[in-house]
Image (cartoon, rainbow, N blue to C red; front, side, top):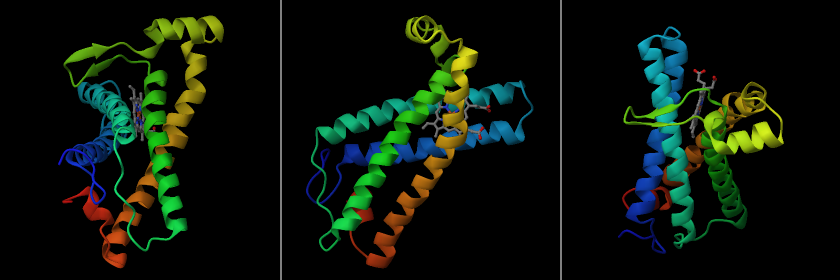
Length: 193
Ligand code: HEM
């Protein structure tokens, strides 16, 4: 079934979910491989950066699709017996995950000084070269890209990068707790159905 039912997430929601998870893993591997294992400005260093940018932009597009699909679809019912507090915690946790998965691609794109060569197929111009940047950031705010990128990079590289990990650990931990300790269908709804 493509759409969600009262019992399970449908094939589209499940595909979007696990593809996002895979891409997040890829975005971390590519950026830390670049930083820890490559010399600056070598071909492999630049290729790893381009992979990070390509994966990051893809996550941004996927998250927008997920939000549209979520709004157009019903969500499966919570597990019978789960407390109001647990349901509220899950709702806030999911909301926070959506928020960081929108903020991270946005701040990444707005902060980078490089064009994205999307999976080495075609070029996406950097934010500093867009009409929006020239009108709003240069024209209206009176900032150069070097000035504008300081707080944006801080959110992307310091704050956001850490918050994403904390939320993912909490999210995956909760799913495993449901599966192995509570032995309910929470994880099954998003896997085999
Ligand atoms: C959900 C999406 C994304 C995640 C989770 C993510 C995560 C990260 C992380 C963990 C870092 C390393 C921070 C550090 O220096 O310690 C980073 C750096 C960076 N990100 Fe992203 N990012 C995402 C999307 C993007 C996008 C869409 C772009 C640009 C199109 C981008 C551009 C950059 C750049 C230029 C760096 C610095 C790379 C370096 O100095 O080696 N990111 N990102």
